[in-house]
Amino acid sequence: ARGGDDLLVIRGVSKRFGGLRALSNVNLTVEHGQIHAIIGPNGAGKSTLLNCMIGLIDADEGEVVFDGKPLKGLSPHNIMQRGIARVFQTPQVFPGMSLLDNVAIAALAKMNGQFRIDPFVYLSPTHPAVEEASEILRRLGLLKMAKYDAAHLSRGDKRRLELGICMACKPRLMLLDEPTAGMARHDTNRTIDLLREISATGITMIVIEHDMHVVFSLADVITCLAQGTPIAFGKPEEVRGNPKVREAYLGS
Ligand code: ADP
Ligand code: MG
Image (cartoon, rainbow, N blue to C red; front, top):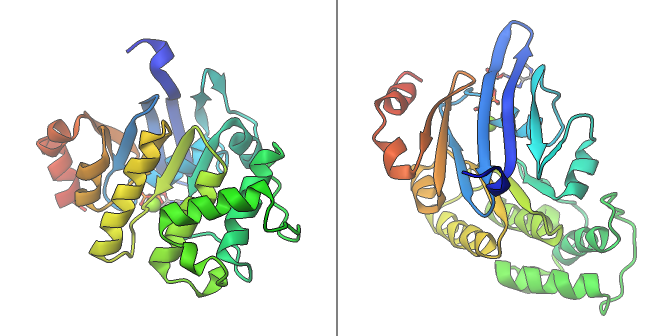
């Protein structure tokens, strides 16, 4: 592919935790508009790689280049300003606030061009951020619960709300760490549809996922990590049949 097709390029990234090599010389390229799935057994280094991409962890070696510019030295909130948003493995929402306010403060932060989210701001019901938040909740099927306290949501709904917060930030790249973990099949299928919709709006995605049904429903390409190293990359049907991938899962 031409360099211009690449939104994110990871070059030679390594990370140790004490004596443990969590990532060894990882190279990975994410093209504009794609859904790139990262799979691999538990402990393969998937979340660590994601944390390196958003600046939560400094890689020992290598670099992460987003849209042609290295991310080194930027704070997680600077990285978010550049257009990368992330959904955590455990849902992160603001408890004690309504669903609507959860999404509206993210929309407001985006409108103001700064990602210091202020949970104490007052927004009138006609504020554009509130209108945008309502529209996002409608798309998520959460509008009926707009006034509920986010703390009381089920795990599946919390994940959906977190996706809404992410959408309000209008990122160019969304990073999702196991977006369907802990969901029943019905919720999983709704999430797949939703992620497809978000992807269709032109947002590039990296999805870490355990559930192969989700991976094969969504991914344009797949990278398989094992013991901190990519062992396979390609289209879903290529990776599915790769004996190294099968071996990595059986050995875990
Ligand atoms: P995955 O997301 O693929 O399950 P992780 O990236 O969470 O894997 O972890 C990769 C390896 O690094 C694991 O062996 C894990 O125990 C270790 N690890 C992850 N984070 C830390 C940390 N902060 N300190 C020490 N070890 C860690
Ligand atoms: Mg993980």
